[in-house]
Length: 173
Image 1 (cartoon, one colour):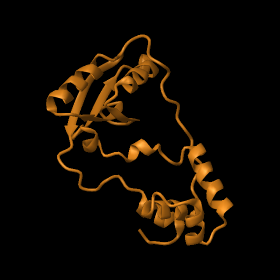
Image 2 (cartoon, one colour; image 1 turned 30 degrees about the vertical axis):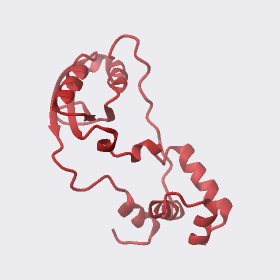
Image 3 (cartoon, helix red, strand yellow; image 1 turned 135 degrees about the vertical axis):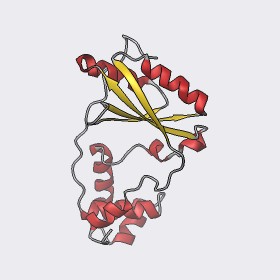
């Protein structure tokens, strides 16, 4: 998977900040994900065109993640979640990031400070599969070493509702 024919790394995407109306729309979608634009506009007391334009803009701006991000990893047959810290050589970090991004089980990558350089969120079928994925990442150009933390149980799932409530002005979360 890792090799010299790797594509360019993903570019950083600057997202326009959400305002209170955007946050209200997103909170309503959290409560009813399949709501129509008309239903949302009626519920929120906003014009249909306002709701439709804002949803399209948030999609285009990158404020909304792809729908696949909502899929629970265990439901896809990958019940093991792990966080790998990768120490990389700084000389060719773009190539390293491109190769790491090619590994299908890599769900997310963050450049970090501290002992490592990249924090990589991966999913695996079991611990043997996690070992395979770790070895694959170690074969990527520039990866010097890894450190792995396996998630035992998700105690607070990824969430944005409390932040959106604060942005919308509707809560003190």
